[in-house]
Image (cartoon, rainbow, N blue to C red; front, side):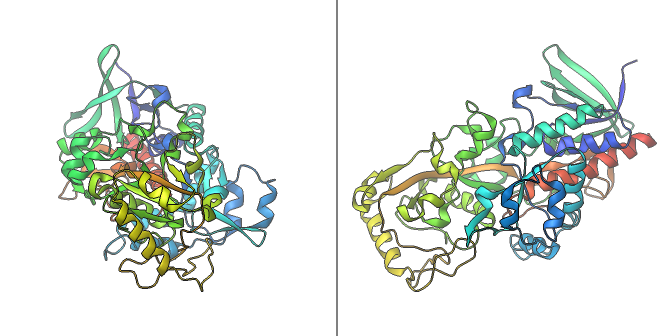
Length: 499
């Protein structure tokens, strides 16, 4: 008789591996099946910077998670705190008046303990000095509530979780595309997979769908998010095409969450799709362009279309990626002067970054392809005249150095564009993951619209609806994957024991 696994996990990203680790810790035999080859496994995880947002009270909560306790910078670092109330407020800021969803409350409440659990699995973290802190009066000041990333970023997170799973006796098989679910007497009992030898049936006492959203499907993006999104650059894996959602819906799962929403970010206009598969995984984040708060963004009509300094970029980049994509021609230019060149994030100095440069604005403006030159001159002139000269620039806080008299203000970090050389970067909107998913029960089981559970079927990761709405505080996605992966793994293991 064919082997019956206690738990089969579909997908191999952060959420999937956390689910597998949690199930294995409960004594379940675990098989992870991934349709990508080994080099492309890990879902979106390997494309990320590995940052994880979680509630913490101070440095004592962070120190046990760190890979290098001898880093001399730790002695001159102000990590501050990030309370559950601040996490709640940050999520509420994107909810468009909605109260916290049950899923958001779970994310907040279990974020710290899940990070600590990951630490016990062998995952280590590093302070995000380069992107989340500024040097002020000789100290490294963290400013946005996002403090740690996995050592070696998303690649390191995937490799650490995979190594932990294999060490603990879990198995993973690559190039195994799940094509359907097995159902017997109303209970999910396994999966069918397609591989190099053809179709195969794999039996299980519980199945966890952890194979992402629909961001890599042009058809589904246009259907659920809007026609502009057919033109979006796909920042991550080409494999998240909605397969898990399709299989769940075929069994009557409830469509749940904000299907019109997605994690987006401004990206290099000329990047290849899927984060450029020709370069190492760890470099793919370098196509992001998220230092817009240090300059201005203008569209093809030569007008600014967002308040670039509305808030710290952790709280705006997901929305501004959408805003860029929805501009005429689906592009914009980010413009900076020499005063901020040393503050631009590393992706602006990436070897494949596309930009134009000139010693004067008069020489730069004609290089802004697709933009009305006269309009650009007028917009920049009006912006420069409106900048507050009587307020000090300070990137470690919302400094209130804004503009006066503009219909669309820049609220913070506004400095005149007056010091050459000047640089401008062409950007478009990139999509990382989608927000719409399925509704889960307390143990991670997938629910029908009437509230009943689909017996034997669980989900986590991008498939969980209700976590994000009209935006996203940076670093919450990986944490959500880990939180709900852990829940699903434990739930599936309990199902397997009772089967």
